[in-house]
Image 1 (tube, rainbow, N blue to C red):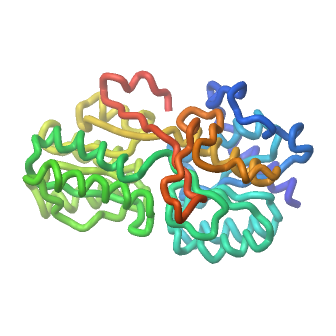
Image 2 (image 1 turned 180 degrees about the horizontal axis):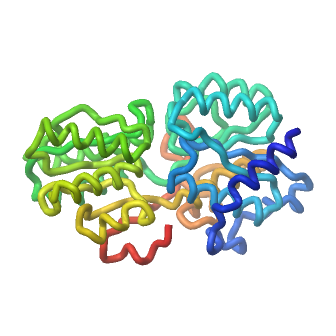
Image 3 (image 1 turned 120 degrees about the horizontal axis):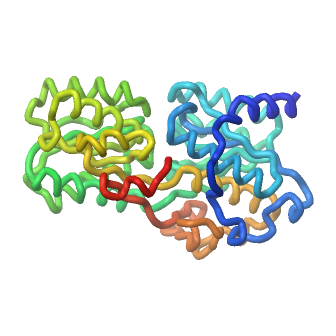
Length: 346
């Protein structure tokens, strides 16, 4: 039954092929393939929501990892950002007896009990975008979350000439990483752009571009002089871009936030938004699966500060929290404007 389910999932998502290798396997950490481990591990990656560009790209990395190493890897997630649906998916994976679960939680708190159950069953848990997760073997983040948010605010503040009102979006009010980005952005604004003002509580948009658009539109009615939007979730780039373009607010309402060229490119071209920032979710998916195999093959003692996974952005892992050595950071993000957007095909 498990093999049948895996085959169906593989067929379902076969259209998400990647055009070129995401990782140069010559640099990949040694001893990670099925031939090295003498066993094929079954690893499922569970994401916040399936069917959006961000996680389509992550699937590319998960699929390449399986192709490169021979392990049985795939990705799935709910059709809408929903904590209960994520829990049910993980319950099903526990019943199937997978070797490891890599997870990008929509709600850390909601997943804690089911991930605790998974680990009690001997399933390895690797997380991403979940720096406060407790029931996990390792959490790997692409960068320091506060620094990421600070960089967003540097660009937004410059666009706004350091004055005026702005709003901030998060996919979920319980999404630790996205809220830390906004924490970093707001702290940087207060220290460097004191004449700017955050005028509302954080808008919770459920990682959905239409929700972003509608909530931002409502906010604009309440605050017609709004000058800035700092976006945590990737879909805000599309929601904000659509709103600015429709209202003819280019040069009056500015955006800086997480985005992908495949989603926000048209708005960059039109001048509706000026700046997006991201890390490659495909590489993050690949890195999570790499850590899972390391733990499964008895190499957990190597997972510490300074580890080189042989993956761009994860060549010198940081472990900044002495009280939580299982929390690791990579280094680096990409900043994209109209001038350099053609360098990225996702």
